[in-house]
Length: 249
Length: 340
Image (tube, rainbow over all chains, first blue to last red; front, side):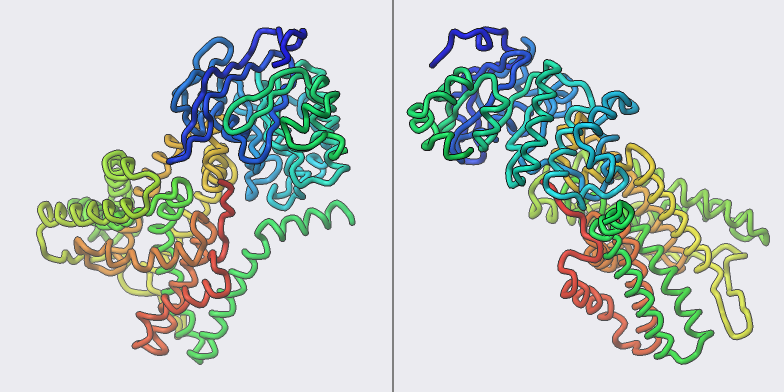
């Protein structure tokens, strides 16, 4: 483990200690230990099937941890229902984006603004970052392209102020131009001090936005450190991920 | 491409095309029937009968489709609410005998309204108990849902026998709703006009609630992806209970309306009409209120036209219609895209 640098030493906003998750007869998470430092963007990397999405869903309470402890802001999250986890300040962008296709873009955003009318300043900023949302404001969200849906999913997750943002593979299946727009949007979110945990397979994006990184394999965290250190070490990349990041430029 | 054209195309992809297909299908059925019947007055009478039947089936089916869409619950006990609503509503109307026999339309409607409201309140409350005791323990298991809700239906039927006795109970319609209005050769049954008006009102109210209120948006979102609704901070179970109660109350209202339509009520009337209710829900697309409305109109019209043109085919016509629609659109007219 390569600890010892300043971003890693910040107090964790979210911590998982020895978390196990079973889905039916399958033992997916097998003792995950993970700290998410406040104000940082932590990348969660790993091969397919390593347990990254399960980790996200376990944090959100969509699947219950069978063992171990999850603490958010010092408070335990185990056994807390998903809506209460969201109301404590964790926003979630799932891998399939979770867009309500029969609802308009506006209605999707309206539902995400739990505490009342949408904050206009925040909405204006989102329109600036994702102009397509304004253009298709009254259109059914199901008719948007994949990239526009992803933009809506992220906008929906940040329209209500939250303390932690979980994003699961935001660039999956998107064109490079859209990936570039998403990258700059996420960098903007970072610049506002957002705490983010992101699963990503696109290493170029991971390197561009990540502060810290955790790598999973077989349901466990096998590496924690700075994103810059992992990006600079091809041998480590090949050992942990089975390939070099340069292959994904 | 201009923004407005993009918006129009987006709306077509979003379901307007399917909606239009459903409406065209209804129009085609009506025109075909006109050609088959040959007489315009008879066709108008049959069309009104079909619309009235469709509206009543829609009232009964709309709650069921939302219950399925929201929590994936197959409630075969829905027929119990139809029967219970009918018996409670009729008991209220029987207690208001002089109002039913009055020559004033307003007084007659007040009696029907009282029966309908009390029937809805009782079935709504009963729906809450049914959901907590019978449905909640079997969330996520379709086979158990079918078995236990069928069991619940049988228990309720037996309880109706205990309270109201085993015999069918005839219900005379209110005085001013008996008979028909005639315009030349066109005969319009008064009660059917009322049924159409009630059905359209319920559809308009439901559409308004589902599209213009936050709770309606949550229901529509929950039908698509209940997990995401929870992830946004809304407890889906509470929403589901509210929908289950509303759906039960609507089934109760449908029971009152159907009882007056048939002019007789029996404990197993709910189970009998459930065949048609399920056909309508399947034709419309599981979870879709709008699809349910279109499906109910199609089934009601088809049933009445075929009963006139080929009486022996009437029973099977709805099933044939369902088969044909499923071959054309395997997920129904306006299916809800599931996101979970």
